[in-house]
Length: 469
Image 1: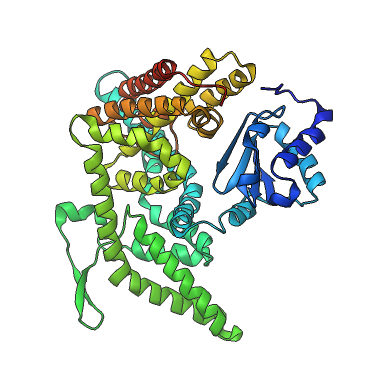
Image 2: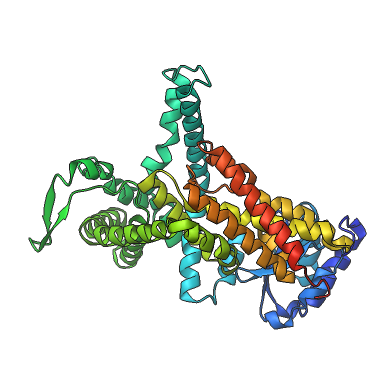
């Protein structure tokens, strides 16, 4: 592999080489870049010489994902290469969002649904991460105080406020989802938030009291056709997404047919009433049932005897990352936290990510190829922080057997996580920093980490790989 410290005078040459190896600019639809990667939408992937691009100086990895050819350069370098690239191709700069729209234009319906779910939940993750970390911190403080390890006044304002702040995002999760969903579906974001507020209205019974109190009141709907329980939607995810999708559809239709003079008044009024009624009487009950069935099924798999469920999930998790299905896992994480107080899915995902790092680390340690070594070590570290794409696409999938080793490592780590019932207080953080979501059980998390890393590392060394490919 070539020198990763690219001289400034070489950026134009590197950009030209990439253009040549993608089948010239005639095969390029659009381009953009993120902090580390050049992102290209290609007309015909068959014309791309992926191996040749991997051997261009400065390139740290090449992979196809999300309908894009992504070329890893690293922070700083990618900006300079992209500047030369746009000048040579004559294309103006586009945003990552615009590029994603172009790249997904030919996706099948299933991929579009998965991508849409990702677009809804990814912006919410920082709020969920913050809440989860604060939950983990309060739980660890409680544990230390209750067992005499710390002498802290838990009636102090800082602790009372910390405990209050920690669950705010989860209590009002439907509002976050409603706001985000409306943006994705092209509706008014504030109307999306209002639909979520209707689903949390204090005139409805709090959903978390149903288990202890039962349903306190039913309401006859659709002119006496049937009754619905007057229960709110705390902790639910899928019903609000569907409700806001319907809201956005109704709103956009009304904008087209309502005269402009009264559009400001009529459209929001009709949209909110129709969507609200449909949500409480039909959409909500149906999709609560479906969501609960999904979460129950996932939990039953995780809790299979002898850790079998965790073994299977940990083993196939990285494959779902490759296919893009992992974007829907936020639904599982958030749903499990709402239902059980923890997500038992995230620790298994964390084991799989750590294992990818372990397999890549094995390649870095054993290889004699300087370019592979210079790519493997930072990619391994990145995977251990939860960012697995450089490891998966730059090393492990390239040689196949390290990917198998990583799958076995993820399976072993997932097996242990399931056996001990390891759960996370939040989502969005895996790998090294994932321990912050497991402060209630840090030793088990560290053991899981060591198992996933160790099995992946030594299995990869044992399997070996062919660097001539």
